[in-house]
Length: 187
Image (cartoon, rainbow, N blue to C red; front, side, top):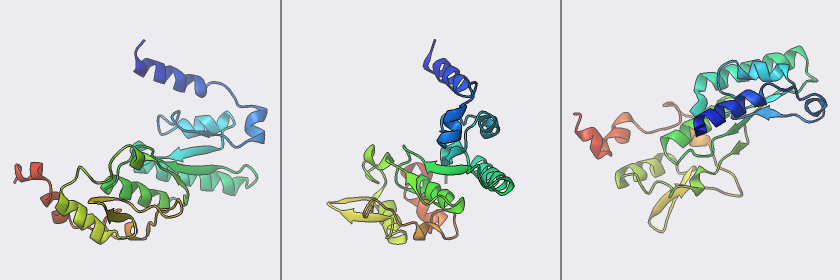
């Protein structure tokens, strides 16, 4: 059995057993079991009350699950359905900015995030792009020791600069693409 089969078997098992009293006593969420657009509906029937939003699962799924949580809580406010936000491997740059913008849009003000621990900030990006991101998002990035990385203050990231036109970035397309050498080959 390969890793994919194990992963699929684990997901199937997680959504095949009702939570019972555990789900009544403790709000539980699905995370990796959220493998398709209907997973949260199936999980709700088993006693789960939450689902994690990750931009890697798709913006539309997060928006749909946000609408579900709002409707289900309006129908019965005592059930306490909820969304959490996380994206543990999202690296600094546009992907992180869009993930933060999505979490903001759906009302998640706490995001589990540690992708910055696995990468070296924006070290792999061209200097012109790092400078442009730093200039456009001074609240989100900081420069120091020849690097540009996340500006984490007291465990928090500011998201103010991601709430502008351009879905998470204030940079123009030209600033985004001109910095990457590979793009020059397609002009």
